[in-house]
Image 1 (cartoon, rainbow, N blue to C red):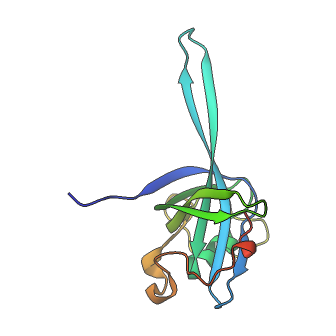
Image 2 (image 1 turned 180 degrees about the horizontal axis):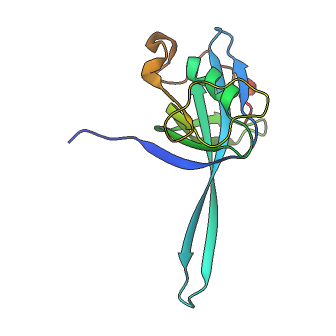
Length: 152
């Protein structure tokens, strides 16, 4: 059986996305999404827990995410999980796991006063990786990216 690496989350953007350009001219946007989990504990009390997910989008999808998303907007993201490591300034090895988006659906109202792409029937805007130029989307993070340029 083949391996499968897919993450799908539906939540709220926690801060406005940050659009950057790599030294090779590649667009990259990073943002985080909060998702909530609700359950009832053994005493019958409702409990809630929030998870924060780091998301990275590349190429045209990065530009669209930066244009359409804002803090508080509901978003549906699908992509693959990727874990990166680097050495911190203190010499310690650091790790981060993020979702590398290949599809994003912006849900809810658009940013006030901003341009919006055509809406889906559910009132949101959807962009798939297939709608971007595939040659613009890297399969992995290129080695030429300076880790100091990454905002997290």
